[in-house]
Amino acid sequence: MAEKKTAFHEQLAEKIITQLQAGMAPWQRPWDTAPIGLPYNESTGKSYRGSNVMNLMLAGYTDPRWLTFNQAKERGYRINKGEKGSLIQTFRFYEEKQLRDDKGKPVKDDKGHAVREQTKLDKPIIRSFVVFNAEQMTGMPQLSRPEHQWNAVEQIDKLLTASGAQIDHQSGNRAYYSPAQDRIVLPLKEQFADAERYYSTALHELGHWTGHESRLNRPFINAFGSEGYAREELRAEIGSLLVGQRLGISHDPGQHMAYVGSWVEILKEDPTEIVRACQDAEKIQDYLSVYLDRAPDRADPAKTQMSETPEPSAQAVYQSQLQTLPIDQQERFSTMEAMMQQVVKHLPADARQTALVSFYQEQTLAVEQVLPQRQEVEVER
Image (cartoon, rainbow, N blue to C red; front, side):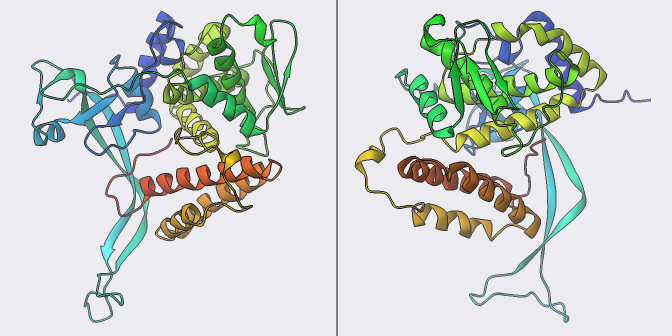
């Protein structure tokens, strides 16, 4: 009898447990370890999402580029002998067919294009792929790494300001988010060894801040030190790691080592928890990304005349793309849009404008990644 294959989430949980116990999980890397870019497919340019991100980061490579065997072959690269690939999973939620009339003839639109019908599958089609890192190949061009300008802390400072989060500084050694008061409490800035350690801590607490009922609405009913509290800490850790990796800021795991035992116990009991944690962490990153300025060479908003509404082009592109999705997906994105409007309504006009433009740009990219006509869609689990 063939040996039963271990499920993807069980493999991932086991890797996390092993590295947690060794102090080497991605969010526990030593402070002086250089940030590793988030993994992406070198052929398509698309970033991996959900638990696939964590699984690829655990592989231990410093190059963020990945390819399947066939993609590497098509591009003229060679997988080095003896190399083992890493597993990712994709989920297909929709089936697309040519729409036909009562006589069985293909239906076409006003422009003569075939009309395709999209139907939601009762069960998603799960496919597994093996991908290889650039460091496992011969022939791939060296990764062009832009010279680090050390502007990550400036970007996080903008993020903290644009979020509108209430941040109070108090002399002491406690850093925490209070759901009841909806505020973040941090030690005085001068108590931190350097700016990166301060902003790394602030980013972690901002991750908790996103869980408020008016934002991503994660439960905060768990007492300090409880299993539920440890689960929330795991989400904030992974979420702040993802945002920090994107910006190139180091991560300080020192404050949260106390949760290692709880995390190991949780994952041993329920391996699917790591998948849910990655899903929530992805939502944290997506939510906070709304505030990030992704165009550093853009003109200073204070010197640019801005209206009360976002740039028509950004919103128009988003609305156009949104119409291509099924109704249930449109409703999900519309809910996020309504949530964003509530978030920014109290911001100054220029900050509100900047946040909305960034939001529509980010959402347009998100819509493109879930378009049902794509044969494979990675799950955010």
